[in-house]
Image 1 (cartoon, rainbow, N blue to C red):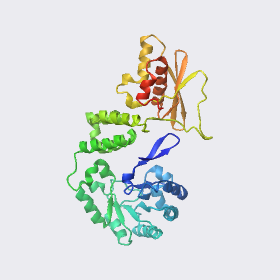
Image 2 (image 1 turned 90 degrees about the horizontal axis):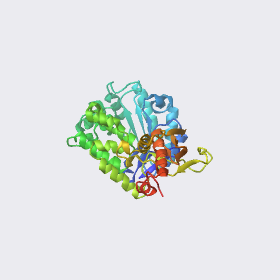
Image 3 (image 1 turned 60 degrees about the vertical axis):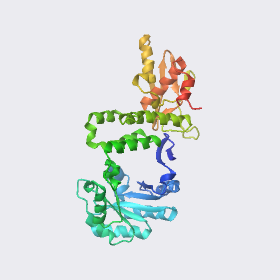
Image 4 (image 1 turned 135 degrees about the vertical axis):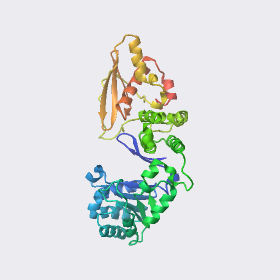
Length: 393
């Protein structure tokens, strides 16, 4: 895969691969022409086109001057498109919403067309309207008659229940193609010309891809939630809502063993997976480190959640059980946070332990420190930790 990583926490911000290079359009939410250009130039060799989002009505977009806020600032919108068109080697497109006055929508689209955009997607609602409001295909159709670039119609998910409805919406709008969000999130087999697949089949196929491409548990859960919708209230749905790791999600659809095997396979091959930990970059003036006391025992040991099938197998559980059985005071945890990462120092029987890894949440940081303690006490061996990927050579 081709990964773009946030250096502050090791998070994979965008992951793609050569197989989809000519099909993936990266949509950017931006209010800054220069920043948009920097990002576009960073990814232009790995995607088919860059799209600028001028349709998102969410508060975070509006307050940041992005999304639908750009419709009220056409000069800024045009400056973003122009700098991209003039400086990147791939196609540039944008997505907008219709304006309250049709003539203003047509005028804006014509101005964008004159800049050289390759296509435009139009959502058939205004900035203040939401999915409960009816979409306006007549407004989209009116725009298509005034421009020569492809117009992609959007906003029809409420009327789309099968593949034939996609074509009907396209024809009603007079558009060249259709952009679908909600209907595709509910069941991506909406794009099948034949009948749609059962939801469980779609979820199972999706989860296999998530495992194969090491997708984050957070994003995987979000997508499956959109598929389940009201089924989240079923017994299986409630178990799903309690899941936190990719393995736990996969287990619900009988893919737990497949997930475990794949992740262990990646580790044995020395591949970097989305393990829930990362180290801060060790170079540069902005790196922040905990000033460790010389008596703190620090080891390069990472907590890898996939290695622990049961709650009682977790490092903290083992350590607490050991303390209770032997009448020893329970360990205490001191957690430090830097940017978006956590690191914990555990105190137990007069000694202090920590992992050199910074974790992406407090719970994992505590487990990592407990694992270092268990290693030092002889409950686990370095050999076993190397085998399961907790210690990387």
